[in-house]
Image (cartoon, rainbow, N blue to C red; front, side, top):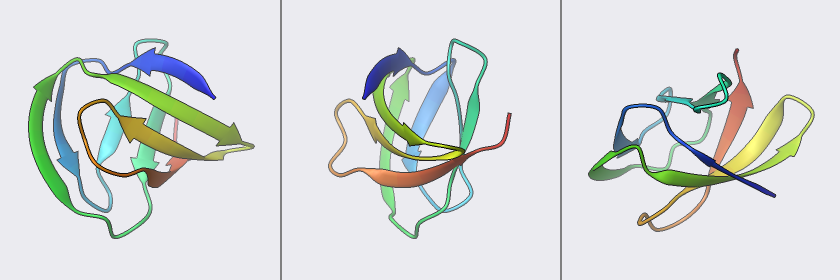
Length: 70
C-alpha cells in the first residue's frame, strides 16, 4: 500500500469516476460503490496489483476497485 494525494477536487465514489494523483497516474473506478463527499486534494491510499488496485480516499467510508488508465 502506498499513500498519495489527489490532484484537484474529489466529489466521492461512483462507477467511472477518475482519480488523478499528484504523481501523474490516473485511476478509474470500476465498482458500483456510490458515496458523495466534496473534498479538495484529499489523501488516498492505493494498493496496486498490475494495472488494477484498491483505492481509499481519506474521510470516506470504504475502499473501491480501480484500474489504471494513465
